[in-house]
View 1 (cartoon, rainbow, N blue to C red):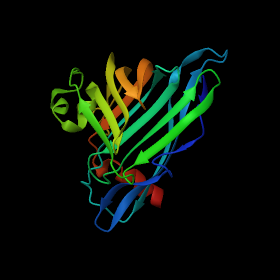
View 2 (tube, helix red, strand yellow):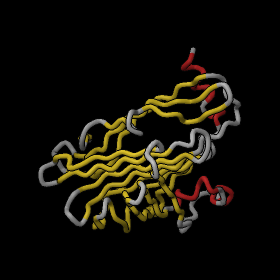
View 3 (cartoon, rainbow, N blue to C red):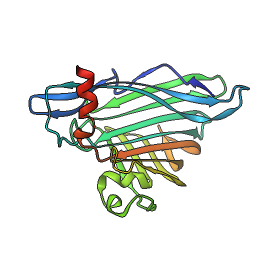
Length: 232
């Protein structure tokens, strides 16, 4: 497979550096960069579209082992009514750093050129992201399905606004059998599906390449051995 970036390397949340979790006497920070990509076979046939991530966690101070750093993350791509292709990533934490961000990339398929690219995070006045679960799927264990941290694993709506502007409104749904449960290793559920309805920067979505999302119920103790080893 060949991964072809669609636009420049993205420093996530504007500069690639943000706080994942705060605690008394320190914090966990990340250096996060990403590419929106087209996936091709060696002969040039298009397989699909997605996102490639690169992230590094760094520790400042010694946090309590029960620090909670949950987040929900959604990435989608597809076509708008104007014929332009969109790539969207929306991320919001539930605890810890309380960070949230979104990036919206518009590409003209006719030329392959980047049409526009906008990024927002919690530093922008009036910026907000909402994840509204549909709870139509029940593939995760019953005890996990009841946790709000896991709700987006079953699909739902993702909306982002900046002041009076609606950046996007998307309804995502999972493909049967595509919900993956980490079985308590990271207390994380991931899913793959598609956008079934919505709009992006004022244009109706006409088709979807894919949608990927994960939602977590992470305790800091999960990462403690790895991060302490990094610090040595």
